[in-house]
Image (cartoon, rainbow, N blue to C red; front, side, top):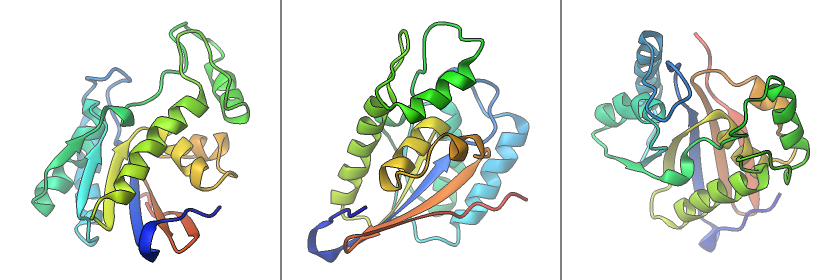
Length: 190
């Protein structure tokens, strides 16, 4: 996929899936294990020249990268468009199969939910704005489905299986520029 940036600029995005949390609600905090994972994230990013941090407003995403921001002396910008998508407001006992289908049919929209295409469009809008910013290296803290949909935007072969293999936390590095996109998982589980 070609992704054109102005002036042959190269931009790097680090997409971070939040650490282990106590639930899926917007205000669900990190577990004790998740707090330890957040410390590991700060150690990982202490070796990276991050210039900007943008996060989902959900507590688990924000808490996951707070130690990173603290260690780097940076502020965290919150963006509502990075919140996790809602698959459905209806209880789905077979939700995993429905989720698989939404990666195959990007327009499939369940009751009260958001289609993969709509969720992808909102997260791509965030990425597009980040590419216009002066920062060359940006960390984005978000959620598994939304992260996978952004990765799919850059590499159409990414889908349900990649979502299913994500860990808490997880990190993908996306390098974009000069008509080239490189997507690589860079988090190593300890």
